[in-house]
Image 1: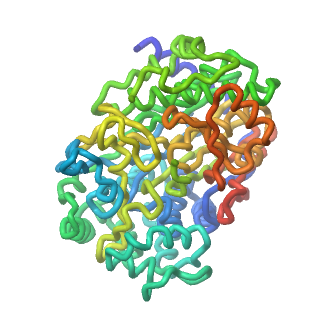
Image 2: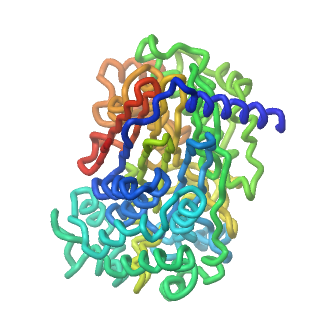
Image 3: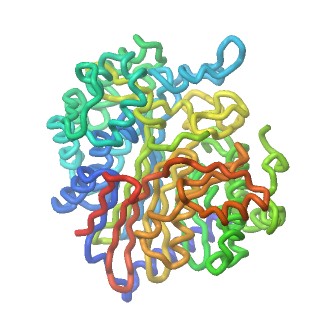
Length: 559
């Protein structure tokens, strides 16, 4: 293990030294791509005030927590993958939520031993202890150069002055209305006068602005202690939750060594557990490394990629969890020899039913998470994926705080073999335990090569891993950042044993050919994800950024 870590460290040093060689042109402009123009503008504003990419990441994260609460928020958490230019350091800031101390493995089971999905998804019992605010302070103290209060100012203004309602948040409010109506504080924000906001109508969040001001003044203590913490705990417990002040005060940020792997002359740096994304992506790419996908027949390529997805998701369901609680065989799962064994079980002409793989005996669309990518003019980079779990999370705003609480407890395995809201299967490695972080699919990623750097990621629930994978494969094929975010998407996650297709992703002839190989096709009526990516050409210094064309609010700006 020590030898492997040393080799990986050497690879990282080689990669980082290449980035800083005399032949490399630093980025001529800064690029930010996020899910909302107010968030992208906030990031650029902080850069203009002398901040770096890490300060900008706080501004973008916090602003998204105000204007895109169907996807993220300070009542949730996330992963910030960082590359620091001055020394080539790559690190993942783990701001994932943790289970409260009173949580236990059977807390969502009814008298018949079945999962009560309403309790697991809606209301404060569904909420784990948030990590996003702690992440902000950690970024500011250890990587940024501006005071936290400066980086939070755009978000404070957005909450106090309001932002115009737009179609995506309106749709989510409509879908969540029955839950929101249970809680007066949620009603006041999302259903004023009992009505869903109309497009363009301002959504104002005065309580949230005050909470952000407390954080700006006191740092994370303004959230995890004092008046805000007391109000949150009181509201949670009055409505059936189990939080305590000690749960909040005991929350800690973790710095994780990213997962690294190599593919066709590219070095990938991606998310470590409690994300399953980095390991799954490494496994899939190691399986696929034996084939030249670029010039391959389309049907054969999709078939082989699907079979690799199937096997990686099978491993996800069995082995992966919070490494502070379970032993995850990272070295094994990311090793080329292990991938070679998985590859040997793939037939080039026939799909293998998932039931044939030893393991555990319709997904939502995934508008529940957000992603942004940043490169600054010094070469610092951030790839961040943030979440509250499902759309508008638990639906519960803690009275007097404006904080919408996550429903991240559903990302644990409430019962072995029982699918969660995204249809993902889990086992004991991801069971509920006090203080444990739930398994995630969030996959913020960097790619380094001799002449280019890529920063990308996406929301999308269980499909995050496969969407990032397809974007990576498109990058490896030599296409640009606008192509990565636009590619048609397909997905397989082991169970259910179906090949899911985005609307119009494949033509009828290709679908028929895949069915002939034994794939069970499930065609969706809509599209998936919301990818945001930035690239840097190290030869010319040119920076490009792109947001997913599937959404009207994506904002990619280079300046």
